Picture 1 (cartoon, rainbow, N blue to C red):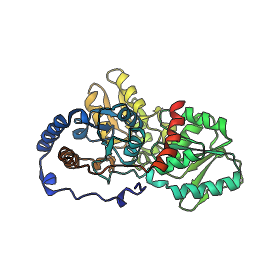
Picture 2: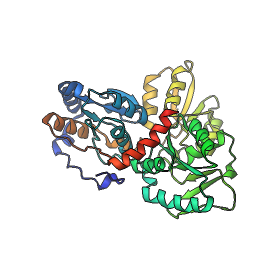
Picture 3: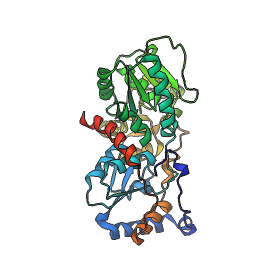
Amino acid sequence: MYTNNVLSQVQSILPPSYKEAEDEELLFQAKIRKQQLADRLFMPGHHYQKDTIIKLADKTGDSLQLAKISAENKQAEYIVFCGVHFMAETADMLTDSSQKVILPDLRAGCSMADMATRKEADTAWEYLTDKFGHTIIPLTYVNSSAEVKAFVGRHGGATVTSSNAKKMLRWALKQKQRVLFLPDQHLGRNTAYDLGIALEDMAVWDPTMACLEGDTSRDFTMLLWKGHCSVHQNFTLSHVNYYRKTDPERQIIVHPECSWEVTQAADLAGSTSFIIDQIGKAPKGTKWAIGTEMNLVKRLMKQFPEQSIISLNSDMCPCLTMNRIDLPHLVWVLDELYKGNIMNEIKVDKNIADEATLAIERMLHL
């Protein structure tokens, strides 16, 4: 059965031999298993994964892109998703029922996705519809659990990505007067502001206190869930100001999961794909400070040595939950697949999947 708390799912203990093995040995073993499983196996790897994992991935991309590619690969019996829990859920919902989606380590969750639960969403909906009537449509970032996507689908809403958030918000505001945006307040605020919605027309819903923050007498347009990305939250205005003073020629590019203050102060803000594209097409010698996950920043440094690339926050570490996917766990699940044993399967309950898929399909249709 599906549960929103990945830590409550039972994962077999990783045998000590995998922990003790050297990376080279594990890489060699993974390549052998990939050859043996051949077309029966498809391994997508998210941009934020370690280089050792990306080297083995069949395709690299963002979460929804990888889920869609997995769904298109009808030959693969096994989708070993090198990402986090909500990404594997989406892959399970979009792939055929005969395909098995596997997460190498069930501890690979997402703190942002965990900041919104189905129970909290139901509580918020009851309060907000009592206050504002049937004038609200929900939108959820794809970085959310299947249960939250199902909540959104049930109430006529849709999912969004950081790439299409503006388009989806325009669509939502044609449907209803107000939008409840889950679970990342920063993406919701940045997107709404870019579309001309004033900050004073946005309110923050605190799920822990089950209330709207601040002056609740206003007629708000955006109701922003009080959630955030633990990685992008660590880029601050002081980081931007430091490079403005010490290295004014260095362009600052950030992800819209960063705070409003940071995105406003940056030169450019956009999705992971946007950041990669901008760096890739920039002239040689261009100087960049990038505000996104460190594994990706380091990979861009290697990929574009002709550019001067640094992290906007020099003290940043990679996404800790994404880094749960490592060679020992990956080789372990591949070895077990070769033996005919399916470990750490991610299976979303059909009732949840049906409603969650509604939210995803509404986005894809646009």
